Length: 139
Image 1 (cartoon, rainbow, N blue to C red):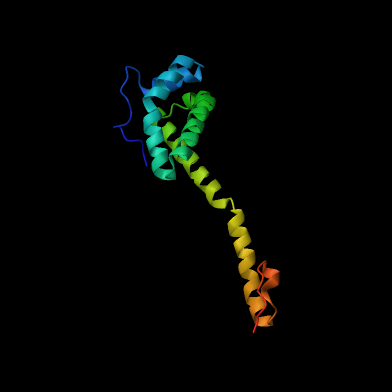
Image 2 (cartoon, rainbow, N blue to C red):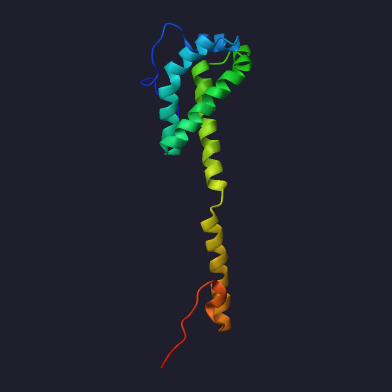
């Protein structure tokens, strides 16, 4: 999903020129690029991850990576906006994979619990080993 031009603020310099300046470690150019693209990147990431708090963290990571990799990007003469967009998409997808892979303790415990039920029910043993107690029957 490319960055919508609606969210990219206009400016006197192109994104490509800003990336070249960032490659030379121009902090002011980085600030201008950030102000121009932060809304677009945040919107793009937010649409992918669905959580504003996660989108904020991913957006920050995108711009850190832009700063770190700008010297390599500028040397390759790539499209600056497309490059930032690709970083945002990759970072969002990585974050989604991290969220999906991290097992919840509840899910793990629940799976273990479900594994014991059929065995216990078939063996006729009382369910005390499942962590539940059965009150004694009084007549």
